[in-house]
Image (cartoon, rainbow, N blue to C red; front, top):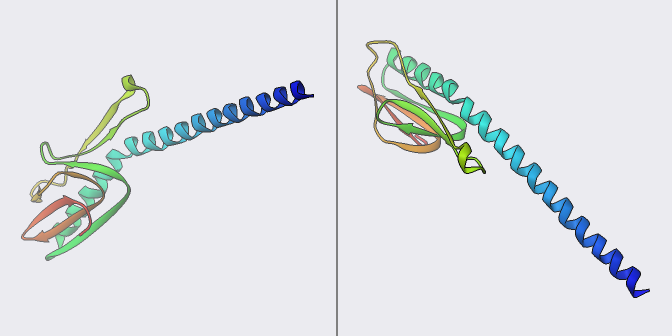
Length: 134
């Protein structure tokens, strides 16, 4: 009788760990897909910043705050939006970059570097772009 109980208990423990392992793999895959989607959205984010710069340039002083729904890295030099993706496998690290290219004659400056879900654009003479909320 105790032999049957120990087999059942052993089987229950093995099943628990197998289910936990499969669930963990599934969660990692979903997180990896979400990060990959964000990485490939970098050119779209750069286009949104370009449109905001162009729009602010057309009017008087003002500010625009972009909510990007994921963290992107704003770099000073060169003027690029970047997203660094770090995978679970060390050999699969990847970085995606996209330049901000508003029309010629539109002056802007990236005032600071940083990683944020938000990008703030303020116009007081020249357009200042920075990570974070306005």
